[in-house]
Image (cartoon, rainbow, N blue to C red; front, side, top):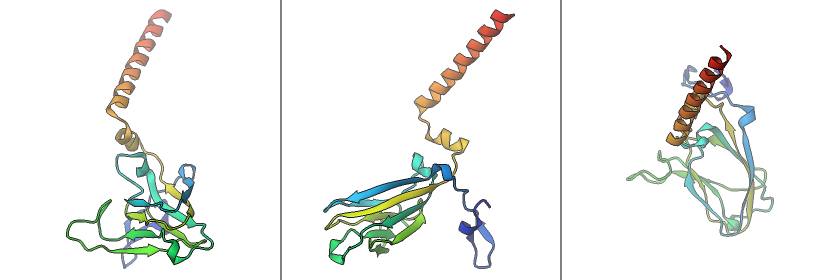
Length: 170
C-alpha cells in the first residue's frame, strides 16, 4: 500500500482496503469565512464525475478563539448512510463539532456528508483536502463529450500534418 497508516484493516489486522497514495502537489487549502447568518448545507467533498473526486481526506482547522455556544455555526457530520440527503425512512444520525479555535477535524472526503449550521456570529477556518494522484481514467471520466471530440480532431489533424511533412521530405 502507498499509505499504510491510512489503510482499512479488519479486526484481525488484515488489509481490507489499501489507502490511495496522496499527492503532495495536489493538496488544496483555503480560508473559509462565514458571516453572521452564513451556512453551508449538507454535502460531500468528493463527488464522482467532478474534479473533486480526487479528494481523499478533508480537514478543517478552526480559528475562532472566543467561540461560544450561542455563536452557533457548528460542523454537523452525518452518519446515516446517506449522501447529500438523509435516506428516506432513516432517522438522522449525526454529531456536531464546535468550531472552537484550534480544533482540527479530519475525515474521508467521499464518505462523510457534512454541513455548517447557521451562524449567529462570524466564523472562520482553514479548510483543505489531501488529494490522490490523477489517473488516465480520471481524465476520461472528467472530460466532456465536446472535449473528447476536440482531442480526436486534434489527433487527426496532427496525423495529417505528419503525413504532409513526411511526403514533402521524401
